[in-house]
Image 1 (tube, rainbow, N blue to C red):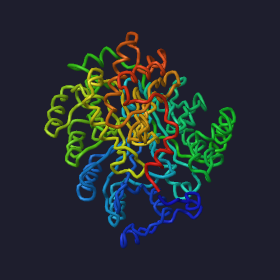
Image 2: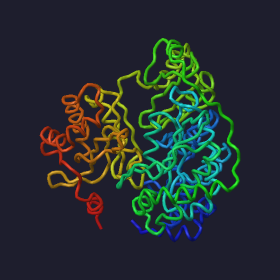
Image 3: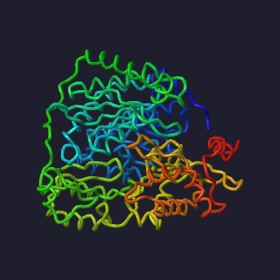
Image 4: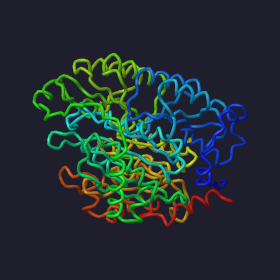
Length: 547
């Protein structure tokens, strides 16, 4: 693989010649030109002369007409494949090189953009899909999430040239959102203080090869200052990040290098500076009081993981199960129709690669269920299907080492996961943690592994995540790809045997000891398992690739 001067191409202004790409294709593009394309959401696939195009969906809010148009684009340009990401974006794959400029123009016509969706950019600003209607959400933070996204992306022409690496932000107020705040570069947890809506602000979180959980930067920032708080995170990153060493460019390395105390002080100074700049007033949102649980819960024939109560009695959040986030165009069109006929008129992309409909009348749930079944889809939890999250892996991603979706499909037949379908298994096709494998009950990170002296395509296996106790998953062992299901079943079995009543998977692993868990799996899998972390998976990958 040719070396690439990312700092140099940033300093050159990230030039992209879309006219040449449309005329001549990508055969003569330099590595630096390919990187510059990424800042426009255009990423090279593993295959020649085709690209993945990532469409930004701030806060995960997608209008039905936009969804239908993306479905049509996928059919015409991308092998009828729409992929929903863990950051609430949408990807089109297999787009021919000469078609890329036309596709970008079509996306812009929809009121969407691909700008800053890949590369060292603001990848997306996520938002709780139940914001403003869920029982745990104190107010609707979606307007703030979208305002932050718009404000920072508007600076992308200059900002993408100086950002040391990518940055991700997350908004929301539920317990799940508190976990997201720990895992992202910036986390904004919705809270209310003395009747005023605002946010706890967290910063410096990220997973991957060197995981680091966020630190608390401010206990309460009012909504009017949320743009300043987000800008301060970006400003500290630009001032103190390592632009010249991309492998050490993430914000977490700034925290590691200068320490949490100084990081907090630098952010506070940047926040004070940002507050002196003019910002628009936030859109008004009501502060929600305590939900009337008795009235809410009485207004349905039955609740489940996929049919959850909203604050308004008689209304439900319906989660459409999208295994591994993959949809055909006709499936996305069917969901868009349901959003208009049965929901609030929008598709809410979830952080688990599903699609959520809001404001569905509870007496229309069966109509939704029947309509989904006509297209081979269903409501989350209706079937005892395991909760698998997966990135696209090496099937199309140039960085992928293993085909994560294949592992995800195989795990759908896991006996252990069928017994415990609420367990979360996240499969990343490389160590970069696009599927956040270190936050799952069981995480798999694709790499080259050495088992019994032989090198295989395989996975590092992670357990022990307990974000309530600020603990991310750790490597328990490694396994060849063909043995991943057996390894997961062995892990589920030992958890069943030794857990205390209602004890979460990660907490059991921590209490018993990760080494003890590994010893049990080693006995069951014999010569198909190696306990502990690999010596250096990067060396194995390089050796397997050859000269």
